[in-house]
Amino acid sequence: MRTHRAIASCLAAGCLAASISGQGSAAAAPAANAGGYSVAKTLPIGGEGRWDYILCDPQSKLLYVSRQTHTQIVEADSGKVVADLKDTPGVHGVALVPELNRGFTSNGKGNSVTIFDLKTHAVLGTTPVGENPDAILYDPGSKKLFTFNGKSQDATVLDPAADPGAKAVATIPLGDKPEFAASDGHGHVYVNLEGKASVVEIDTKAMKAANVWKIKGGEGPSGMALDAAHHRLFLGCDNEVMAVMDAHTGKTIATVPIGKGVDACGFDPGTGEAFASCGDGTLTVARETSPGKFEAVQTVKTKPGARTMALDPTTHTVYLPTSEMEELKPGEKRPAPKAGTFMIVVVKHHPTAAAAR
Image (spheres, rainbow, N blue to C red):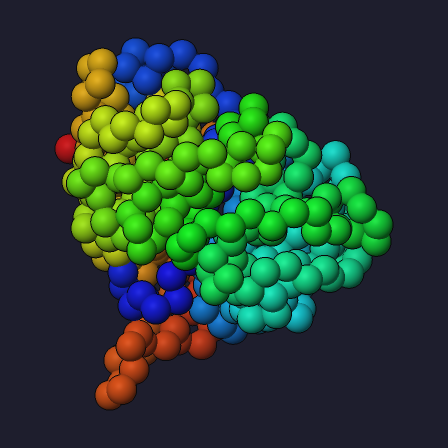
């Protein structure tokens, strides 16, 4: 994600399951929409380094947290660190391929992907990709792994089943710096282009960019989430809006006001709600309130710096990493996190509570 952004300023980083599945109409979502969200607890994690993407595995109830030079694997319920992958330089994100029992990290400073065992957490090897890989995504439709490379402005396509761990099979030029990505699992991968305020649709059969769509009313897109059942992309943008785009036509349907410093989005198919996590310490909850009309239905106060998120759609729980921060020193673009204060804010859905607007 954006390493130039201040700490107080988006899978996705929600779960992959939330990006590739969905049931029912968003405008007539399940009864869970009658409820609201609140901070349930904060998990003290500790450890050194800044953070970027966080990924939730709903099956194992584990969180995968990128920490600049290493990657923590954390129990979602207790906050216990069960493993710590060392030597993932400049790590941004994690992707999981459960059928292969393999996980993969995108190492921005290493121009590489680290492959690890999902059960033992042992590192199996590394493989080179493009320059400064940022987002990383497994597409179950093509059974390929994608890294989205900021400096080389392209996507590396890998075969995750190749021995000893992964093999690059294609490179897709993107023409601008990519940010977050999502897959519908049925032949399409979508990725934000930050500078051009656009979305690229990748044809995963031809392994090339099929369309580039301008986001109307949105600037500097970072977070992305997908409602695959209804072909809706939710795009967290720098100008404090979440843009909603038709994933078939590229038409921008709506923009919803959100907080400042968004860096991740999520979508829960069980409730029909989309989320934008912002560095100003807010989590915006939005949904389709009538056909074609999207509104923010709640703003949850989290903590400053909690700009990325992961979603467990099986429990309707959102996880947001952050830290206590040092005072900003002269010449610094962003404050340093206080040693040992890294935490994960847990926001839960309460179906019987009245949603606060």
